[in-house]
Image (cartoon, rainbow, N blue to C red; front, side, top):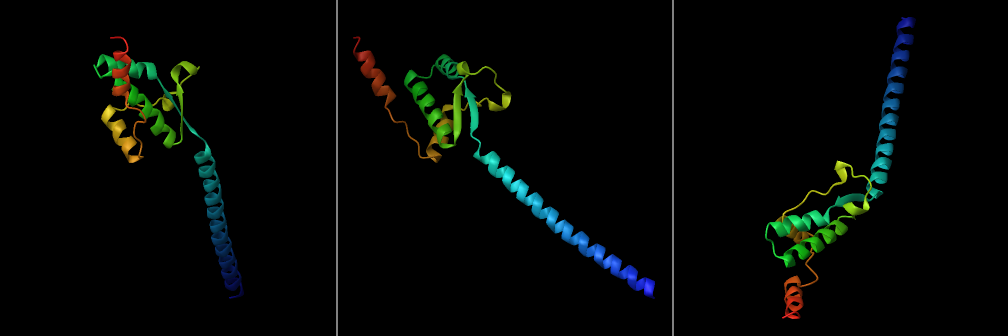
Length: 136
C-alpha cells in the first residue's frame, strides 16, 4: 500500500509538473509569436512597380493619356495608404518576385481607391486639353 501511495504521489506530481510546463510553454509561444507579429507588422512592405511598362501597355490598349496619368497617381496613393513603399523598377538592382506589384485593371484600382476614400487630385483630361490648346 505504501508503494501505491508513493507511486500515486509521483504520478500526481508529474501530472502537475506536466500541466504547469504546458501552460508555461504556451505562454512563451504566445509571447514570442506576439513579438514576431509585432516586429513583422512594423516593417514596411516594399513593392516594385514598372511604371513605364504599365504606361506603355495602357497606351497600346488605346487608353487615353489622361486616364493613364490618373491610374499612376491612384496606384501610388493607394499603395501609400496601405503602408507600402513603392519603388520604380529602374531604381532597383534585384527584384524578388514577391515584391513585384500585380498590375490592376483601371476599374479595380478605382474601386480600391474608392474604398480608401481616394480621388484623383487633378483633372488630367482638362490639363491635357489645356496643354494641347496651347499648341493650336
